[in-house]
Image (cartoon, rainbow, N blue to C red; front, top):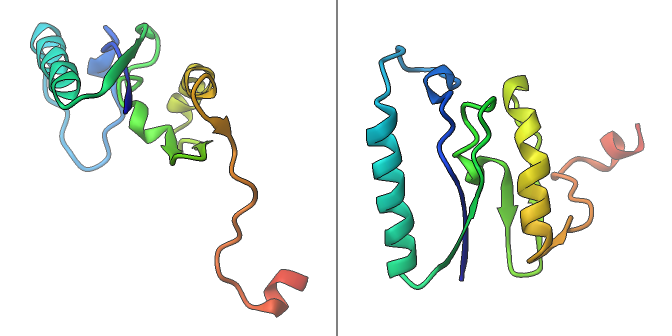
Length: 117
């Protein structure tokens, strides 16, 4: 099993927040916790592929927000926050080494009339 991770950006204090009040982030502590996370993944049998840090992308450590993967392929998402959209290229490149990118077209359940419109 593969786990793709990414180093914590030095800009993480500027991360996107929606429902929480901004609080200080201890970068050294966050990096230590992330290293523990990666070690836990490896301990669970995952091959950990760590992507390099993105100094200008505060949320880039959250690679799981960028893609959905299944055995057959990986789908790269379009983040809602404009500040996160630059994260997709590096994650897509990494996943592309292991999975086919794109799984065809998925159309959510809609009425036939709506599909003809």
